[in-house]
Length: 74
Image (tube, rainbow, N blue to C red; front, side):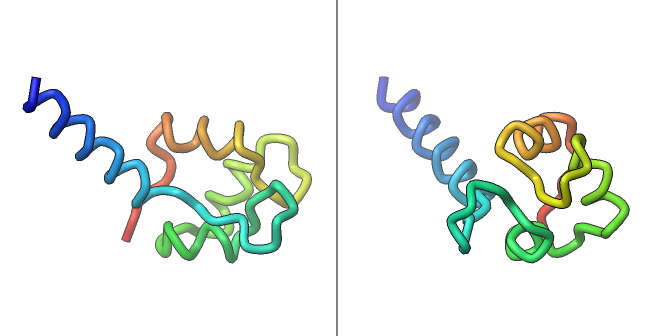
């Protein structure tokens, strides 16, 4: 049981490290906001992640990009 709880804590910590902060509170993620967590993000990759081409990444687009492995930290 303790091992499960420790594992869950590690998973939570890992998730927290990859959380992008919506600094302007608009409910979307700008290139600058994503760069704070994913400094290797390129303009081309941002356009690829922005599936609806509205110039910002919403939570669904971000989750899809993370699940697809399109975002690399550091």
